[in-house]
Length: 320
Image (cartoon, rainbow, N blue to C red; front, top):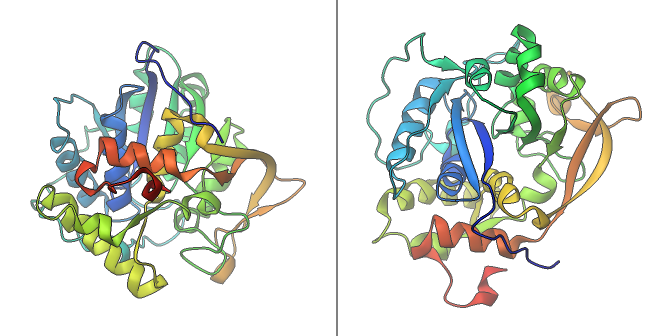
């Protein structure tokens, strides 16, 4: 697959990101904020990898790590699933959501912090909405003000789901879909143009353990976050590295030719047990563009050039 070139003069793509930071969310946000191809208009914070109070604090800390000055509105999305009990991924991301990275205690989130709906309504033109966690925030916005969502969201890019790949929460289900299958059902039924970037492709994007070790002296904060992630993947999957799922959704916006999509119709299992949140083919289901193949080297190159330069392999072949 040929690599795309992106002239510096192209108009940046306006995006709003709904996220649950999260170690891989951290890398995805840093990539987005360090990329001139994207104009991040707002960041909405959701539960998911951790509770929303931690996630909001983490987003503030991540923005502080950007090398240049960043002014981006933060909003609060969903604090819990629509119907299900709140469960977070402390085993995967640590109690704080950022592994071993040092972060201050979470503060109190005030009610007047912008919700996702308001972030969207403030946009002068339609934007790309990227969801990196459960899609509850978007489902709530669709329920409260569907006209705003339809007017201001030109497309929805979601890191969620799986078709052929094994799940990462249950045998069949991806974590974000599992957290709130009712929300995902609501979003897909709304027929917003949605591109699903799930485990079929994200599992192929790995930061190796040796690459993380090279961050220890020059990027200790990111090293401490990723070290936890690598330990989790080694103990649970036998992988010497970490799958950085959310990075791929952002990299795709920067370099669209890294992914190949299929047009599918899907439904979401609302059962309990192993099938909860399973995204499966259904001829009567909702239309979704689903990423089914990925070319990882350009994605890894973007990540190492813009976020993890100290961890970069010495030769180009190692980018594969």
